[in-house]
Image (cartoon, rainbow, N blue to C red; front, top):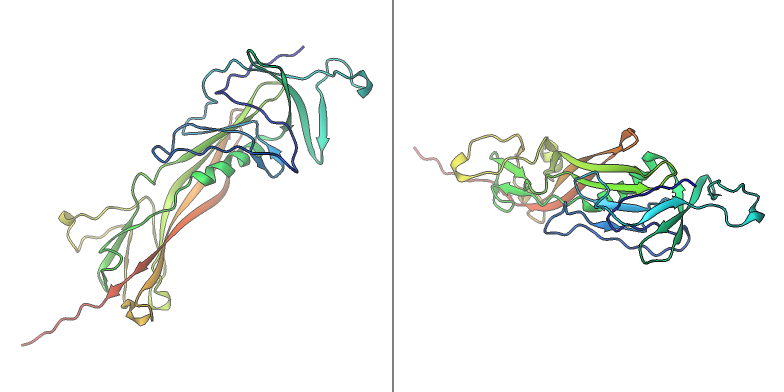
Length: 283
């Protein structure tokens, strides 16, 4: 009998039932968005993930006393040869039945999808997306105190500019297959909201520079936009601006496979009051 020992952090596998299944999802705490937490029972595109871990590491957690092994046929009427794995197909997805044995607990049986590393990565990505924060923007001059022809600096807190990773795993006869999906911020985009009166969006790579008084009012920033018209041209007296972060999504499996998924963009809206500075010149 083939026997596999998986060492995981208090993980459980799941019974397959796509049309109705209770899910339990834990998210990373706000005090530390990279703190490792467990997520069990997530269903994405009709594929069950046996376990998910949140954090920057790509491991599968602390040692566990639970053992996993492929189930053997227990019904001779199924025309299966003794010693073969118990399998079934649902649509195009193959499922294998596994025994989960933990100390002082009865053996439980779980159908686990036989899926590719990329499919596991997409399951992890569905959780990683929930960890990506909205980019609360900061400006100098402040959003309600802008001036035309004065460079408006924009930036986000460096604490937002951090990768977010999730590792998903499924058991297989050869051992656990894991895929770690990571969302990495790489570009900041500012849509100033002045439409045809402006020069279009401004973008930069990185979180931007935080303005400080010692820098002065004339210094440039790679993350900067210069308004040419007062927001008084709008009935509201404000420009509806948006600040966005573009996140690159990559994944890597313990099988050696790796790849990318489509970029994800998170945005926040800001009301910009841009004034025209009036000066009286006399000779």
